[in-house]
Length: 438
Ligand code: LLP
Image 1 (cartoon, rainbow, N blue to C red):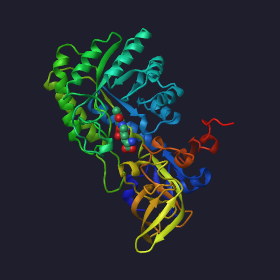
Image 2: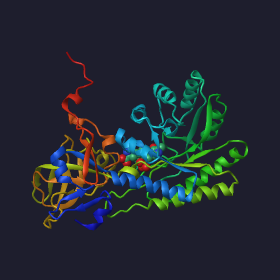
Image 3: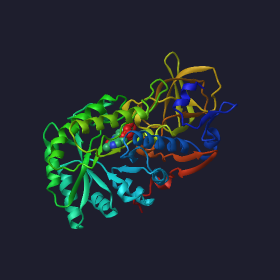
Image 4: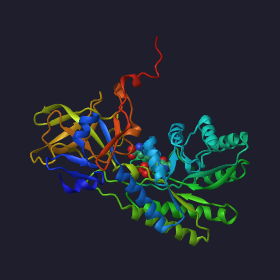
């Protein structure tokens, strides 16, 4: 296997003498035999290491900082427990994510509830659980949170999500900081100012801070730099006239290495840019340093996870292309179809093979667009081979579906040669458990 692939595989990865991929001390071919495929495997040590790096790199440069795991990247009770273990707070966007956090008694103060259209029942559930903060995204929601908090005689902490009008230069479906987006109160249109005043005049709300998120993945530092400067410049007069901004969040969106060719910036580089720009901007306008909240999702779990599939049918169209079909696809990883995302592909039982060919790796779903890798050079594949897509820990399982009524894959956590199921494979009964029939 090319050594550059080791930079995108889970940190505890190696190749055995018989050419098998080993992750977390476990031979992935043995994992495929034990648990079946498609299978998602998470290396616990990579999650530990990413969580620790974020905490260290930010707190070294800005002591009053806190890392909140953006749980939409992938959450289940086992991952939520790891977040608690690492002292991470959590960013949730639905009642479902709240329920998972609650299932492991996630400390309520450490939960931040985001989203552009939280429902009345989600807001009620969250207030009843005692979530630390809502990140409010619309006038409708400000009023709803105020009303529900008033019903319970509570003073609810909220932050406001602003839209700074800065392009993070990412895919158009994942950009959120520009004017033309459903997210956030625009500074440019005057909504941001109105929203701040509106929260301040709401009896049951305590405006603790300001948030923005530019999109993801963002490979450049400049968008963070520009956005922090312009948001602080906008806020400075309000802070001078009494707004006590205790929290400030430039969101998440930190890039990961999906392909060996395109390396992401180091966490230290993001931390340096964000901390320095925030300190410089606060100094420039003579305002107190707020607590810095950072929300990595993808970068905590993407590298930790691999997706594993078994090769089935192989179709050769002479002179045109060879299709290698696997037993998963767009139902467990919609990202290539949705964002044209690229992945490396590894034949995990043939790492020492030198005889290679270019193929297209496709899934088993009844869609032409069900392509996992459009054109990749692989060892010559046979039915039964085990294919691995590295960097699959974020937004694969969390965006998975039961399309074509395929049960979702099992998820396994590996560490020091041990493996354990953290989500069992779905069954046909699971597929029908919500259906009513005589
Ligand atoms: N904070 C907020 C408010 C967000 O909306 C998001 C992502 C994050 C943090 C975390 O971003 P991350 O660090 O994970 O890049 N499904 C897409 C990404 C959409 C992300 C939506 N919000 C994908 O598969 O790439």
